[in-house]
Image 1: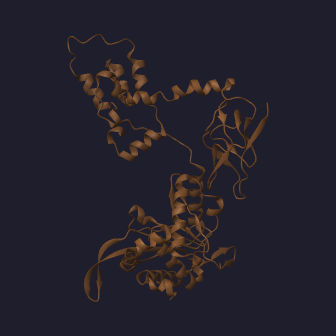
Image 2 (image 1 turned 60 degrees about the vertical axis):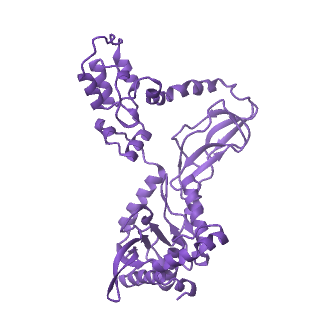
Image 3 (image 1 turned 180 degrees about the horizontal axis):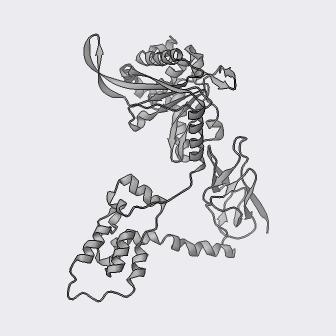
Length: 430
């Protein structure tokens, strides 16, 4: 037997510990070299742990959900054993069908069996001796609701009906769905109000990322004197320019021309004019940054992350669009690295992609300002004494009033507005 230790990768200095997610291999199963064995969640990113060699999973030292630190041993691989020879492999094979038992119960109506019942409905059917197979569920996915069970219990029994099978309680328990996170998420997503009649509830721990987000938001609110200034921008010049060149741009650069590159360039344009917006506070010192690292807030399945466009002032429109597209893909797949999420001198949050009309974004410490973008909508505005319809976007910039006075904040936002309403300024640096 030749055992190899599987260890936690080296975490960054700012990450004290991490959490194991779900093992992709069980003891006794074959493992290929470089195959991903487990993912480890930190408060910033999710790290993948590949197998250093081919062999068989011999032992899992740390189970799912365990807290771990850098270089800690979490499993062992036997590089000389044959797959499925370990007795430990028997347990997962037997346990898997039991863990999946609720799924066949929910799918039973299609094969002529009893439909899945909500807990209250199952209780009523057990007490009234109603066979779940005789009840047509009207709930989501064919589930039997409390109303279905009451109606079936009050309905007259046909004279030729067979005697109910003994021990109805186990039958009712068999179709009672377990309260799981996916089930609750599905109910919330589809807004199946009938499913709320049984008041499901479950307590789950925060992920490390969500806990870190909560911590930083509270830190920002507690340590910054946050104030927000607003302005509106006519997006028609940007939209006209984009519509004129978007096909040529995509053909030339292999990426679509979006709006975020315009907002990033407009932000850099304003930060150059008003360096305080790009500065930060360190104790009693003000740190002026001679570079423009722009954080782009990106929603991911794990929560909000803010990857950094480094040296954004040196990036072309195509470079910005490619980087943002890459960040979005990595965020969805959990592939962002700690380096990509570290630093930043100014941030941009685009709530408009979700339909937000107006918001007050929270500063991402230790930065001193953040730009909030919202949905562009056709609105009536007055131009030269005439009411006209224009695609308008409300901009919001939150800033730390300890460092930035209203003058710099307002003029900085006006500079962004002017750059967007006259995109030639972005090219001529005016």
